[in-house]
Image (cartoon, rainbow, N blue to C red):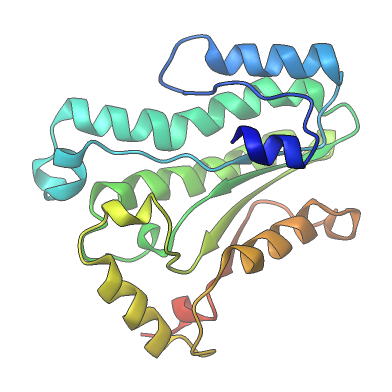
Length: 207
């Protein structure tokens, strides 16, 4: 990340492993010291141990379930808590989700359960923070060829299926996701909150 940070002239570059106690708090403390406020936050973190992700939901071990939920869902709730006092003039919280939260997607397994919880958290947090002018959204891209996705078995087949079935007959790229997210962070979207925004070429509307 450091070369990208230099290119963007980012003044704050810190480690943030949400599984390491204190790292999240250290990041927000540094933001408070350096900037004093925060306009938007993007939570793009998900993880499930291989044995939990690769097996049936019915068989998942308690430890694997808790790890999946802590990193993929609770970390967003905790970030919202830490960001709230910094969003003095309002702001926007974003997290990333996927269609497998709403329907059963082969091989997505326990991560689909975690994403469903994450989307529910978005709605509750949006209701709680809305009076302070803080908006909350989940962005749901179509299948993207990312490092995280490479851990899902048969992901190449899913990419091809997405391209064939989506109304636009195109795969989404990161720029499509970025532009849609930037719109929701803009003042023009000030009355939109608590949404799951699909950026997937319409794939989610097709049976």
